[in-house]
Image: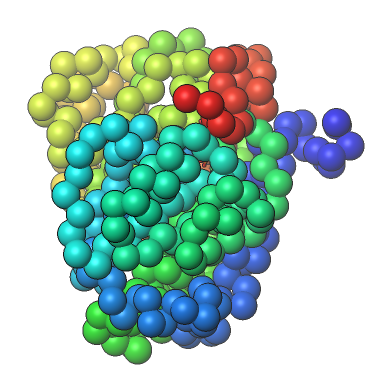
Length: 368
Ligand code: G6P
């Protein structure tokens, strides 16, 4: 009902704009100015995390993309191996379980049939314990897991997930830091990352203020049938999520590739009819990414680049650069998700699709 949308035209836009607040809410009570409060993850968390040697993440859809980002964090910050798989694959194959594996399910609804089935199987198979990252209190997933981190996104109405995703990432980063503490993370490093996390709500606000410019960029996609999203490192899953958003609500075919794979196929598709979208924070991969962008330009492709304003990517012919505030390398996936949400939203509005209720899709897939 339109009253619930407040000043916004769609729930999706309202939910995109709620992100600074709900990310902050997800941090509340779980981090101090410089540390993670491990006991906030559950009374048994400390003992449990001490024993974890491997993490197996299971999820579907957007929640799966959050898991893919978390793998970069868990391996880099906690130094533990992490595997990620979509629930509908995991549950139908034989798997080798490493000793002391934590089974981590990510789900906005906590009712996704495949994710629940995978959890039930995992409990039979002898995983160390199950942790849920979920947005719905009292859901099946929450009830059936040993440890729970509730995302504080509040009800998400738009079928295309936005604030659930960024609060999942926030929760996953807090979890990673708690786990990393048991695996030799220094207090200094923990404090550096927690401080970076505190900056995220403000940085997301800065990105939201680019809404008008992103709406302009969206015009370049209206009459296109195919798009390519590129990212490197932990920004590759952000590219996957950007492509998913665009196809879900604008019905434009969108694919995401790790930028280094460009030469191994998708470059053959590049021409002026296929816009290429890239997220480029100023990390040590940015120079490599820039040369990927040149490869696209040399083939007549049109580029839309969301880049750190210190990364040295400037607009010119067939390159539309949007300058984003500098962000810490670890928190960049959270902040860089937001311009891609806005881009998809505006493309869908321009195309006149049903933004909040895209055709053929459901908010929660409770049957197989
Ligand atoms: C559906 C929704 C997606 C969501 C996915 C997983 O496909 O449309 O937005 O990411 O299910 O849902 P979950 O509730 O488990 O996160």
